[in-house]
Image 1 (tube, rainbow, N blue to C red):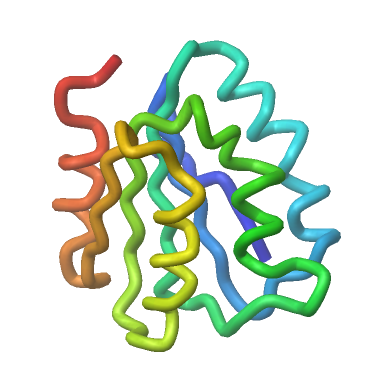
Image 2: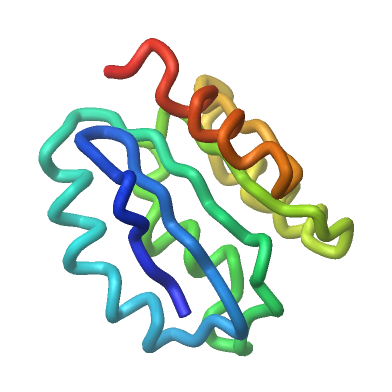
Length: 123
């Protein structure tokens, strides 16, 4: 399941992924996500992967990046994850982002620090 978290405001968006993500999960949040990012020239995104178990074949992380990241408009990306198994996915995402995008990974115990980092010097 994918959900936009309530603390999302303006250019700062928090997205939680839990369980096994399907293509239908993307389609469910895409209209609201696009509405939010179209309100700003550049946005910041927190991906909370603490309870993420994986992706169905048609919903891999690279597809997610291409569908929802609008990569040239993402100025800062914070990923909350304690899973070393996700490190390959994180590195793949890093290769899709322009060099100007700041990316930082936080342990779930650092969730508040991740949000503070993400929203610091807000657009």
